[in-house]
Image (tube, rainbow, N blue to C red; front, side):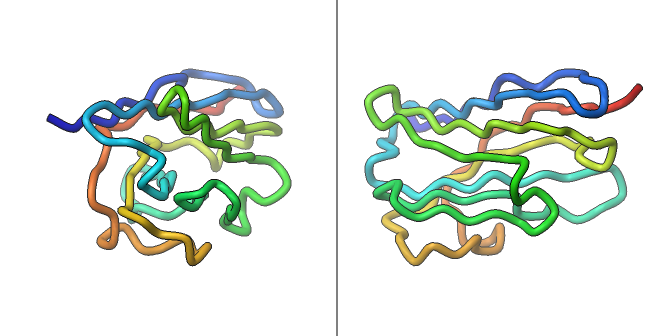
Length: 126
């Protein structure tokens, strides 16, 4: 039985940092690309970051470039999203999703991903 579990969310002041983790069971991140998405209240789910199956390609939404970093630890079957210089507009539920054998480097739309986690809340507020 597959499962993706996000963790590391929380409340932080503007300018602060958080590191989100997405840990898989029942599937190997060595065979999957992983995307991070977020959804704020009343808004559509948007892509934040992507890492390819091999881990050699990454991609970021313009809104987070230079502030967020995605990485993959295949041995731990975990993908991380390091979020620095957080802004109030980063407030959302963050989801990770897995896409089988993808290496094209593009942050594909949500409907192209095969598996999803339950999400973790990130709140940036003073």
